[in-house]
Image (cartoon, rainbow, N blue to C red; front, top):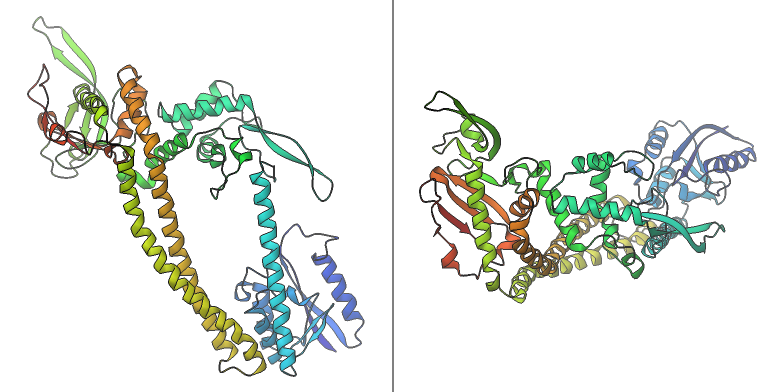
Length: 548
């Protein structure tokens, strides 16, 4: 009796029961086929669920590796599958996998297509053509499904999964192939108001995700599932590009723009705040982690002597009057973290009165805003970005040229496969496979570099597009700063000022955020640099320096 091992595979977990490619059907077909043979006996069966024969290499599939090991040990005589594409669908790999089993004395059979033999060159060529066709079908299916899903999403149609906050589902009037109605997104007015509040509290008042969740829960708001808001849920809402009328890949449409709930300007400001507050950016953070408390600055204030971050603390100072009574003052101070804990030598002050520092920084901000009339034209800023993009595009051109050479080389190697199978090539199947993998790796590396350059170009283009909104925001801050609340002043200060350094005798050095410093580069530079301001009533002369 010939010992038979069977291999069953489905690409997705959803392929069940009556589907043509499901495992129960494959198993039944293989058993019926083996039963018609007089000397076959099925001894072992291997099943792969949710394994793509097109995307997953044979060397990464446990079932294939177990079958190869069993073949080397001589444990079976026949490998039986429902159809040959169950072994795989990779055109430059699977034909050699099948041939490997045949070379090691294993007959490879399909319940639908019979035995794959390798008696002559025609057999080898047919083996390759079969899997070349299967690979093409997989690729076309993948493209077709992805394109259809993206098309539906671009039309604002619901494609499954949780419904996005801010929207509800309504009947689109369309049906799918099975006759079931297709739903589409529509703006939910009540949730739209909540989303607008989330954006405002984040951008204008500096609320964090957990603080926002607590606020919404206290006001009695619920998620779509009726549960309380969490910081994680708020973070997902803040990062969602769909509210800007675009998909994850950046594509948009008229239907998506009709569903827009957030401006690009607001989204960019939210992303900047969240990036600055992220843990991985702790050392470079210039935005306050939160806007609670009485101190104006947090996250962007440093000691001018040791470079350490200054932290705000509440102090209660006691003074004894001449009459013996005790006078207590509750005040906020900035303290040098490094010096207070003796982490490094620092010849600066240990503490600075927050009220004095904040007052001087507010005066600097007012002086900056007074010079709005001398701001450079937006075209000059755009020219600067265009020059930066030029170098990026030169690199892209070079990579595209190299990528074209690699792809041409891959095509020639793939054409050599047929010659290898018919014995007319100077390459062995193993050498050819290795050469193809090497070229594919080079292509992948070049594509990764190219993608990175394109991403950088996109970011720089977005920077250009942000010039006008940033300028508008800058003007808005100038108009509202004096009447803003403390929370709003904190957010203005931490977004406008990249770094504030405080030294002995309250000498303050201020570095503007690059986004806004570009509006200051041509403003009366001599008037702004190393400027000596009027002294405070209760102290010595204070030097203010702005690094634009």
